Length: 385
Ligand SMILES: Cc1ncc(COP(=O)(O)O)c(C=O)c1O
Image (cartoon, rainbow, N blue to C red; front, side, top):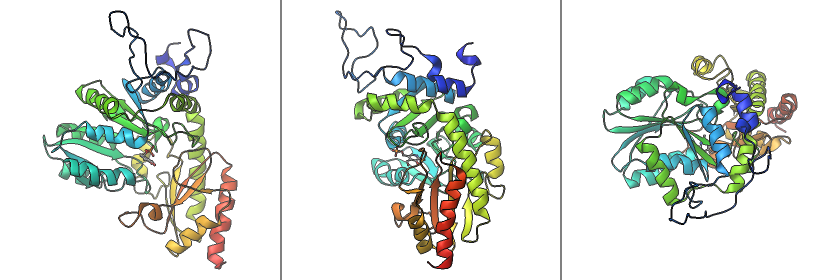
């Protein structure tokens, strides 16, 4: 069977089935070397010169991700933020860019701060609303549309295929932060996006022990060359050990994300009828505004992330987070352990996130144990204890 015949689950589990040529090892080695021998004629016939540009340890993770996303090339970065900001830094001052009103807060802050001071014209738009996206595109002037779907932490869904068409017609590229969906549920490049980004700190690695980011491109064009130059010149590269851990994490991506998403759906359904919960935000619930689109765009699952709004507001939300024992109070998401977080506290006063909201990242525990733990914390606020 060739790689092309294999299902994504198999490609991921085998990390493309590579065997180390030198030793026959089925797990790849780590290359800590920062530098590579030059040929006598000063060339680099083996393709590598210095590890700020490239390292052979990256190959398994980059090639596996390229195959899973259906792209042509992948770059690994020191963090999700390093990956995302490299895309914007490959533009030029004066370019108009569109990004979602609700998105990963640190990138929104960077866009409204550094990127705006640098000269990008940043416009935040509700990208779940196609009419709003259409109205904000400026023909020939908008160079990039950035989407995040599902968008952290309200999980609104944006229509990748429709926005790709609108963006391309206006002469803009489309980049998608697919951290939450992962290639298990969505392949943005197959829907017309030009670049897909991940905070690999989350599901791709999946064990809360690596900070990393990735970009995968549909084509190796000038824009991709500029992104590569931003990376190698500014130095936002990943270390070889982290790249090695990432390829190990990728091997279990499918069973992890499938389990986490099934548990998230169970919890979303059970919490929807809980007397202490005002609202559950989860694209898998039929009443959720983006549900029908998520069903079409996501390949049968809705991610391991959900948010709940607690009756009685901020104080009760904080009390619920304080009252759990199995869920860990911590930021981040996508790891094997379930995390709970009061987002408004971390995002600060400019956050669009309601202050009665708790974000839940569902791990690999039994869904029933997770529910029982949340339920006892929710009941305590109900009883005023
Ligand atoms: C959706 C999303 N995108 C990007 C990032 C940034 O990734 P990193 O923390 O790896 O820089 C995060 C981090 O929480 C995220 O949740």
